[in-house]
Length: 62
Image (cartoon, rainbow, N blue to C red; front, side, top):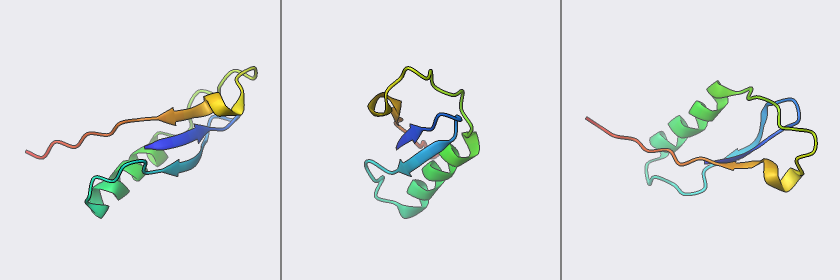
């Protein structure tokens, strides 16, 4: 997953960086990011390029 944190703490431009190969799992990963927003706002001195978050999502089926 990749996304940017806006100055108000909400996510922007959320996207799947590497598909799991299963659309249902990719959608679940996107929804996970959506449910966790808003985040703590980044410091105002942080430039736009440094606001990108790359988050690995691992699913374990039991």
